[in-house]
Length: 58
Image 1 (cartoon, rainbow, N blue to C red):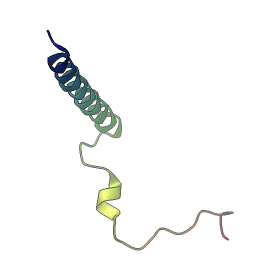
Image 2: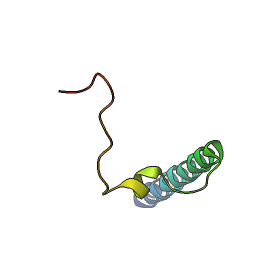
Image 3: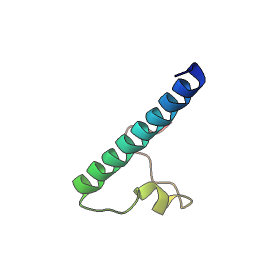
């Protein structure tokens, strides 16, 4: 097997592993939240900012 094919195979396998781990972690977070919806960031993005936490005023 020449190097070009080996590098291509390794790149595809690595990408597949990364996607599989990301999907697995996404499933774990959804299960822990008991909510398969996307992050609250997407729902609240673009609205008024939340108030500062106490003690963080500048």
